Amino acid sequence: MSLIQRIDALLPQTQCGKCGHPGCKPYAQGIANGEAINKCPPGGEETIAGLAQLLQLPVLELDRSRGEAPAQIAYIREAECIGCTKCIQACPVDAIVGAAKLMHTVLVDECTGCDLCVAPCPVDCIDMLPLPESKVVPIVGGLATNPEQLQARSRKREQARRRFEQRNERLQREEARRLAERLARAQRTAQTTDDSQSPVQAAIERVRAQKAEAADAALKKAKIELAMSRAQLHKSLKAFGHPPTFEQQMQLIVLQRQFETAERALAQLESQAPPAPPPVAKDAELKRAKIQLATRRAELKKAQAADASSAELETLGAALAAAEQALHAAEDASAKPAPTLTRIEKRPIDPQLRQLKTELAYARADLNKLQRQPDTRAEQLAQAQARLHEAERQVKAHADC
Figure (spheres, rainbow, N blue to C red):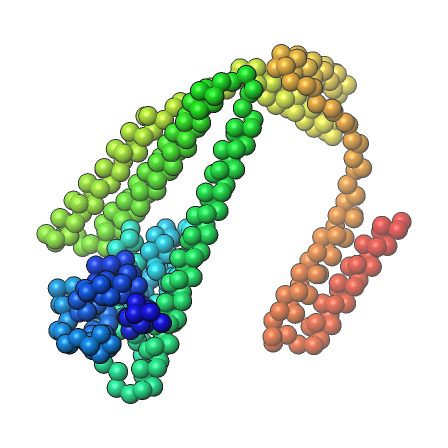
């Protein structure tokens, strides 16, 4: 192992950034280059002693200016989670599971207590609680008292390091995949460009497409920020007392300003967005003709089912024919090919067969329900099975008639 790897093996692998580096390994590189060994609050005195022994340096007192890092774990108040996935993106070891617009939760055995998920949460539903000793072996705080505890902490650090590296590899794969997809789309766009179009015009079109994509992404982000700001403001209004204290009132003022800023940003982006193209008048006429034809056809069928008079049926038939002519005219005007219409005569529904099939469905559902219940008696199952067999027999007998 290199010196950097041996130094990294002694660090707690919380990847919290309290040392001023984006992770434990960059801090290990800094220590190898002469940086102080007392900048790791999660490691505490135990890590400082190990680093001093490895590097043959004097033991220093922990730099308290970098904060405290007791053995702790993140806890999500799931009833308040809005499913924004921001904590999932912030967790360096993939210890939070969930999906967009769904509840998130923390994997207790994998959480390192880095508290990086607390700040991004827009609704402040994440708490850092003392680590349950019965769940996992703490990798931060205090000195190990026996070799077994040292080995357990070493295994925990190795597990956290492995998950951190796997997460980074996954993010790199996803970024490479997105880059490949963008390149493929650009190539397809270049291939489908008209041959008569000059290279300058093609480049202009690509720039316009990129600007439109960036504008859509910015508009979507603004809408999300506005929704989160509104949710945080409403939650605070419900949580604070009436009247609120001075501190709560100041916090509400800040939240209200953030909400108004998000509203103005969204309104500005929407005003800058290009207007949607108006619908083509010919397409609107074609759609209106199709709706009119469907309405006339339904009216005629309803009158036939109600045994209407011949005069009324004749009037409705003439209206249906006029609607068909109007549809053909609209299709010709729209310059679209006329669809191939195929009339299918459907058999009338047999009321008795429908009743038998309904009874069969109920019998099958009742049997499945009884089979899922652990306290179902044998005679109940026998009766339900007999009912199902009889319903199947009746349906088959009616179909054979």
